[in-house]
Image (cartoon, rainbow, N blue to C red; front, side):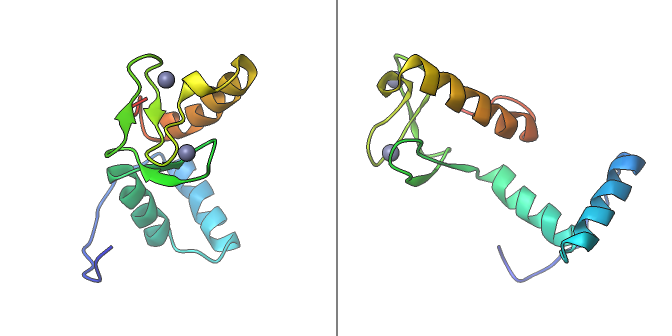
Length: 107
Ligand SMILES: [Zn+2]
Ligand SMILES: [Zn+2]
């Protein structure tokens, strides 16, 4: 994140904006900061490995050819190393992220 700031004009749902402004105020944040953080994440997202906790960038991670999930660069974990129940839990947790990002990521 550079120090040089630039202006951004966006158009969003009025109701969402009102809700967001209230939330931002309640948490002593700024709307610009929230948007900036999201854009930073959106353009180079990362996840934490569900097994070893390593934080890694999605862009640079490999995909397992067997299960189609991202492989942790640290411990090589992917869906193949999970039992059915755990795989379902991880899948649904990552759905939030996918929806937030506007569609499928790499996995
Ligand atoms: Zn790992
Ligand atoms: Zn796999």
